[in-house]
Image 1 (tube, rainbow, N blue to C red):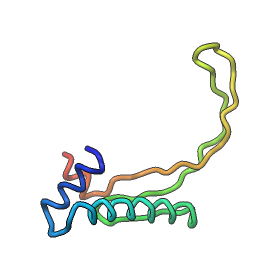
Image 2: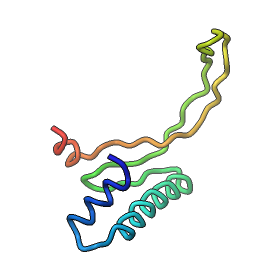
Image 3: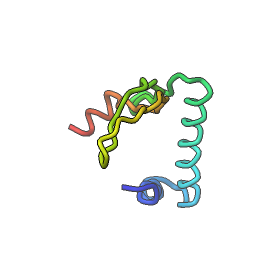
Length: 91
């Protein structure tokens, strides 16, 4: 399912138009990303889940073509943990 399909379902289940649904989705993604970047903490949507930032350690990897060792630098990445209600819906 992609963003347009989600927006179409939002239109079907509510009284908003598709352009507003797309704007809501874009705004949600922007707000969550901005808050994770600024606060370096987490964003919790009760029942849905928690977005947080984790630190990945630097490590040594291998180039799959040549087998040569390469250094992979440390980085910060977003992580999503599903909430209890979302998990129950998937069962």
